[in-house]
Image (cartoon, rainbow, N blue to C red):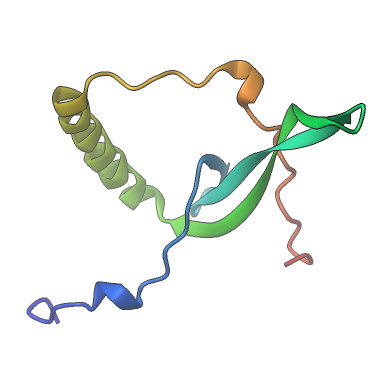
Length: 108
């Protein structure tokens, strides 16, 4: 199987700008989502962002053993990125969406 080339055009692509995690003894569930501002109308003329909301788009379930490998790969990738493009910007606290409660087992 290692010698087979995967057709990457058939993989689903998901945009994400928000992440949250749920942890149990047997796995890490990493929810990737999209955060967007909620808007309020000012005198009906223009909308002004007042807060942010996040919607989960995909969940990846990873064994605890693989999480360390993921962390190592992300750390290496981040160092490479910052060496090439400079340090990452910090996300302002006011733009962070409020956390959603994880779904219960009887909810999809």
